[in-house]
Image (tube, rainbow, N blue to C red; front, side):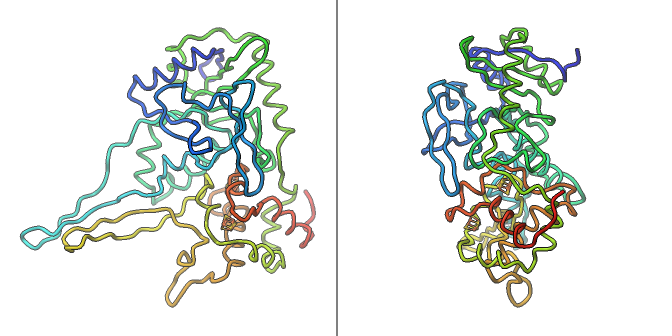
Length: 378
Ligand code: SF4
Ligand code: SF4
């Protein structure tokens, strides 16, 4: 059996040990935990901090924690953050410069050692989002060195989805609740009368080495079957879907649609959808100088195509209206992203729906465009 096809079962003690081993290795373990009324991603020092017994209730513009009687740890869908908060942080200092006593300027590049991350509980949609950001930020001629440093040593422990949220639609973006690729270990949580356990599949040599260090047992047929059927059942329980049409063609034929005016009347151009989106990657840079003028720093920070300044060229912004900015965002996500990066820019995580203060729903907007412009189905 190759490492990539091996499987095992962990009990809760095994999951505890997994986190303990990772912490002992000096890794920064990041995973879901309950904080500020949400399941957030934060550094974990023990598996006890996982959100055992918490689920979430989602809708457009709505997110609530709800207690669960089964005590499951991974029975929640995407929260307000994604792994980009760690791999591609919202603020990052690129360099600083100081005036020397001789009147020269001395530059210092900012290249701190990256934490050795272990991400625990990565959803299949987020595995795909990480793969997209890898292509955008670590590939090509202008790779982001900070992203590369943080990403290169990161260990990914997936948690397959058995409880999709009401805003989830990964299946209609070509994904699904099962982890197919890009993970070191993939866990599927099973809670039934036989107990609380995790079916584990190995996806890499690093994952196999890690698994060898924790108490585990051979995967029994009942746990394997229960895990696979729960994930398969989740495919049919997606809360939302995109219309089954050629979305690139739809966006191309919708440039003058009336629907853009409708959504523009509701959109606050706050940019929340781009901040929570696990694939959005745009940044800008700004200089911050101290009051003496002897020290300056260049910072990179997330930017948003909903920001008026985002399209500022000589003389003013190109996209002045909410209509043009929402259209730009959606057209890039579903259409021109393919031209740039050979994939859609949407993995169907549903974050932009839940965290939009106006409750704007990307699936509803696409359906409205489809019914207005009448693109034929596949
Ligand atoms: S769609 Fe919603 S989240 Fe996005 S910019 Fe508009 S109001 Fe903000
Ligand atoms: S566009 Fe919305 S649903 Fe798609 S990946 Fe981004 S946040 Fe998730």
